Image (cartoon, rainbow, N blue to C red; front, side, top):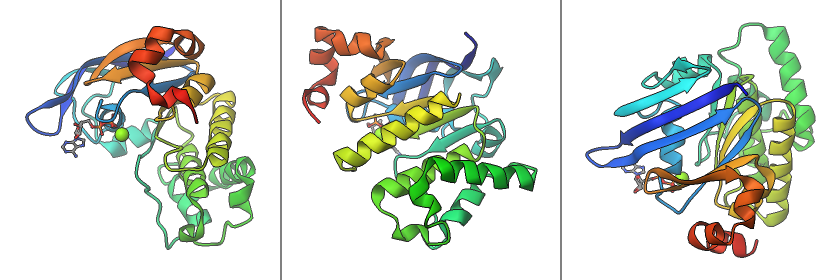
Length: 242
Ligand SMILES: Nc1ncnc2c1ncn2[C@@H]1O[C@H](COP(=O)(O)OP(=O)(O)O)[C@@H](O)[C@H]1O
Ligand SMILES: [Mg+2]
């Protein structure tokens, strides 16, 4: 299996204290990998570092075997790293169509982009109906879909999703997970940080549980779900119910 993302012994911090403390993980082409762990474990920091918003102080980050640690976000976008942040990053006064077009700004051929926008809108029919409306009129779930769709317009080599279902009602959550599965089925490699551990383990190929900036457990989603020790120690109430 081709490795798309390799994170090897990465240390990163916002100031003096390391938040990532020797974190390692590996993601193969076409995989959907979940990153779980308690609040403050460093999940968002991991994605920020891979997306170039933080520079690793130590360790290596490779995309398709090429070192990318320390590159800035624009360079990473050009290499096909799409990043959907934990907090909303839409342009509320712009239309859905315009928000999508922004996702393609590093792409070159307009005709292809136009086709890709249609493809993304086919994946999210709720957005298609409202493409000329402002993003501010969308519901929480629709905003998340628009952000994911905008990421897809990069034709990403790697799609990073930080808590794509946060704050959504259970039915909307299921819809978002279904869409993420469709994205993966179309061949996109996805790393997804999630609070909803049970659902994340159900849909993902593999998962990493982080604690205090390190990988504590790694395995196939179904194996982690089946492991009583893992459930009790790391997944807590996230697994108990929905
Ligand atoms: N911008 C920041 N400046 C300083 N500390 C931060 C910043 N963002 C996060 N942290 C700290 O880094 C640690 C990990 O945060 P984060 O990666 O957001 O955790 P998670 O996403 O797993 O909940 C926490 O202790 C948090 O307080
Ligand atoms: Mg976070």
